[in-house]
Length: 418
Length: 150
Ligand SMILES: Cc1cc2nc3c(=O)[nH]c(=O)nc-3n(C[C@H](O)[C@H](O)[C@H](O)COP(=O)(O)O)c2cc1C
Ligand code: SF4
Ligand code: FES
Image (tube, rainbow over all chains, first blue to last red; front, side, top):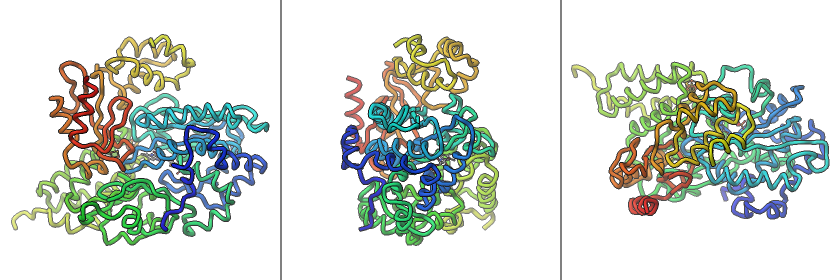
């Protein structure tokens, strides 16, 4: 058995639109438990668990909580990032739709431990059903006394507001998200200061991913040290994996960290569809590396993924079969970023346009050796000099392809005079 | 709901802008925002008109030109693309006789392309107004649109 259900244990088991059902499945028990502990003890538990953020960057969650907790401002915010717009990712939608209370429970625990006064859930505008579900769930939780004033009879007030995005991928980036909640275009800011110092309306703000929040009640329920035993040393716990592309079984699967990608593809995904061969696999989403089949024995964990210099966590696995041309896939990815770039900085705004032109040359077999060098250096420059994660990670697929599919590039080049 | 009612349901705070615009567009037949409306919202929230315009142009959901009564958004990203054996976009375009970015002569449909809709395990996918349609086949695409057309 590859799967291990912790975070998604209730998904498909409970009726998401029944608060009673959630309560009957140990719902809000972790919040109750947390509130018998000191704030420091809750953060210590998360630290022992070794939880790292599931939104992509893999930042230690306890550290983020501690930096919010030490801020003295009486107004502080906790934000759940449900902007999930990365092609190939749909795990947050799965959690929001199937276990909505657990997101609120995780947020309330973080709110309690950090002294936050209010929570926001920023849900991408395309997620009509999750927005409706979460609005309803917030109301229910308020009625039952799990949100609002004097939660569980204690001196702890925490409200949650749902905010809808309006069709912009970059708003998932933390400062763009803050701008968007403030009612502005989602253009990022220069950091530092970080959101935990200067976030929404200038107030200290903690931003974490949906899956990260849902891990919090799990940690309180089983204990940080039990949690840390699951997965690998550098990556504890489980990961929701989104399988898509040319597979027999696509969908969401929860596995402990440390499982090889190939096992996930073959055992959970049922292998490549229509008896075709895998040509390439993209990891993490559009901002992740593209790798050839021989690399699929690598295991899913944060440390292994760092070698791609992308901050991508291990959310998505997109399998692409041998009918598809590498360069056309790369072009489609670049077009996504060109469309979603906010235009604030030059390397990303202009770089994506240039990448498209260069890739088209490779597609038409018009590329020269100079084009190959330019492509390589432009991708590097974008990675190193872009202002936010969008521009920094958008050339990851190209950088990886240049390394692992080098012959394909060389084979497309026209050598003048030969 | 009129713009007045929508505005009265929101506190006079600049951070309400996106929510107000979303509600306003959802109420309108042609899902776009006019110059007068932008001005009224700006006055109500105490922000500049250019701020409202900046938001309108930044987010892909908003439009300042009339769209069709129904907006069809076809996903074009990789996970959908590699399982799209019949070309959803072309099927929609041929069925309605207009291209992506255009509106049908009877003002009923606008076709747009969309970034990933978050249901890649059931691609190919499209979204019409507030509804997602997944696991598409050419016949299903035509049936869905014919059904909405009435
Ligand atoms: C362009 C861009 C888009 C992002 N989109 C998301 C997103 O949709 N959801 C998310 O949780 N994090 C997203 N992130 C990462 C966030 O900036 C942030 O690191 C994350 O929400 C932190 O949560 P975590 O600590 O739980 O991982 C995005 C980052 C970038 C640069
Ligand atoms: S990297 Fe791209 S998305 Fe990020 S600030 Fe620069 S232009 Fe905007
Ligand atoms: S790529 Fe189409 S829904 Fe994700």
